[in-house]
Image (cartoon, rainbow over all chains, first blue to last red; front, side, top):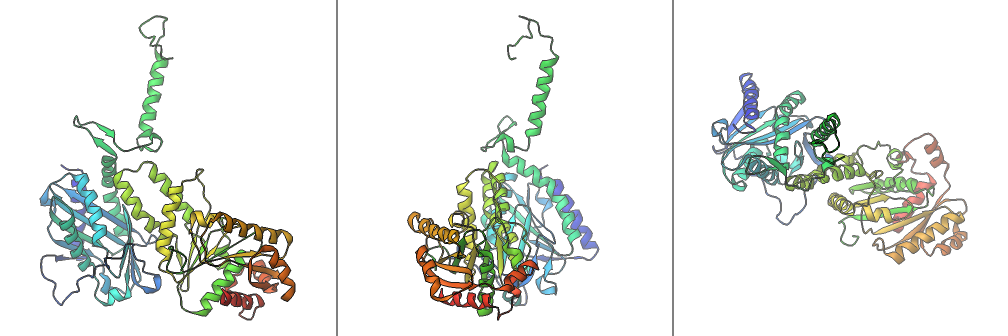
Amino acid sequence: MDIADDCIKELRAWFRRKEEAGASRQFDAFESLEGGAPVLQNLDGNRKNPTIIFKEDTRLELGHPSVGSCSAALATHDASLVEDGLITIVGPDVGETEQKVLPFAQIAVVGCEGTIEDTCAAMDRALHAGAQTDGYMLRSVPDLIWARVSKEAAESGFSLRGLGLRLIASLRDECEGIVKCEMFFVTSSREDVSELRAIVDPTRVRLRKLRTFGRKDDGTYECDTSLDCNECPEKPVCDTIRDVITIRKGDRIITIGGDDDDGAS
Amino acid sequence: MAAEESSGRLIAICGKGGSGKTALAALLTKCILERNGSKLLVIDADPTMNLPATLGLQAGRTVNEIRERIIREARSAGKVEKQHLARSLDYMLLEALIETDEFSLLVMGRPDSVGCYCPVNALLRDGIKTMAEHFDTILIDGEAGVEQISRQVMQSVDIPIVVSDISARGLQTAALIRNVIESQKIIKYKKIGLVLNRVRDGGESLQRYVQATGLELFGWIPEDENIARFDMEARPLLQIPTDSPAFIAAQQILSRI
């Protein structure tokens, strides 16, 4: 059982409930898009820096900090947990709403053959790179995602469905060992996005700890970054243990020259 | 364009405290907006952060708050966290950017951490430069000297404007700022000049003040009761009437630079 498996199962259950309520739509990335849905244009290869789409040029803002967002990249060795090539959308797509700002969740789930931690890290990079396209501005931190779709891109047919296609392609191309890919997008409500965050956050915290502490061959962990103990999330544990050691030393009956005289104090 | 920094036009305002830098920044903002539809970025680089209110806005997240967060996260960052941090900067800067229908505002704020953190400043300057490239004009309201602008905002500007009233101390400070900029090469620039503020009698009599500073005179702003009244009523200077003497003078200064 992998670290993200329970989380993926819980996510699947959540999306199943949406499907049963008629609130979600699903698309197969491997079917050809009908009606000539546009191929997303790549950024000019000479452009090094992320472009900005100003408010005045924005048709739709997704995941603005004031309305909430959730971003996750999850991997599993249990391929049965992943529906390959499926894109699920809960809430309106870009061309289906008159609203200017919507909450936004983007979740990528893959079946993989490599290590979970390395795959999740590679996914994160591939998802960010795969989203770089004209008319779509992406800003993200590990758990949040904020995007703007320009008026021009929206008029040209930019869609979350098209974005999902692109991201699946990017995951397959850029990440070694991926055998299945699935994408989820949610724009329905702030509450829905908050529920997804609550499902995803514990796994994210555990994944971060795994990355911070390298596992040795004997199964124990030691920090393999240049951690400052003062900033280590486990510092309270070590502080408690130090206090316990102090208490134990204080409880000893110290006799001069006795066995308990360790000379430490 | 100022050296290699930005594709836009960069104007920085500095001068002794109380000389009227923020008021001039607000007036020039209004002038630029009245002129044409160019994209304007205003940066409040004065730690006292008076500019947002003068423009009728409220400061939110500041760039120095971002700085503090970067320092905190960098303390325990491994390889993956460094990549996240590289991307997080753009997210946080966009969050700090106050966008209105007419212009955008970035507030630098006050640094909290003790320590120079030069690489952090370089990282933030790079982030600001990336953002500034999308604007036609960047107007920076600084503090007394230009060191803080150079360290935390941009290392070159097109036009530093030194603001002074016509007090002896103000003009001495203006001369000192010019000396520091020219001798220590703290900031690269194309053209530097002086704006005199709260002038009662203009004309030839000003020349003796200007000569003392060694700066070219870009213009002068007359004493204008509208400015004082707006200040007392806490009204944004962007609402100042276009026939106001201070606004007309600011338009002439903008034409000259």
